[in-house]
Length: 183
Image (tube, rainbow, N blue to C red; front, side, top):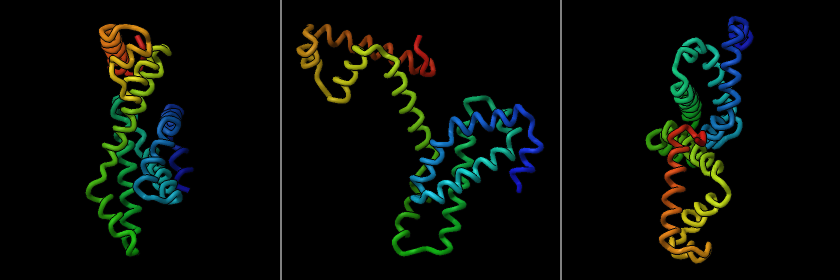
């Protein structure tokens, strides 16, 4: 019922912004909430409540600069997730005691979200590299190969492998700092 009221007073621009946020963050929010709550239904409830709050506060969210919108929404998710945990604590089961202590005190939703976003951004940057450069990154960092081994594999000198690695990392850094957009 409340959603009908909230949607009824929203402008088209606000509805579009909610849709953009939903499209961009729904899966991420669900995954974050599920990692904390360990329950599909509770995670869905947390995300649903989060989007209700987002709709209720869409004017404030719309006034935020773009880079601050996602963290603001994640804070709403954290609060809704913690509300569910508090509701659960009213009926604590013995096997959940260690789990709740871990989540309340040591698990930081914002940090986890930021790490996830940063990993996705880095992977996107790596994917934008040409195939030979992606392979080089794969050999060097996934297989932890030395420059000497890579040089043998690519039939180049070890010094050439080091230089190529430096150029690729510089390019990757440039992509990353440019927001994931290759130059």
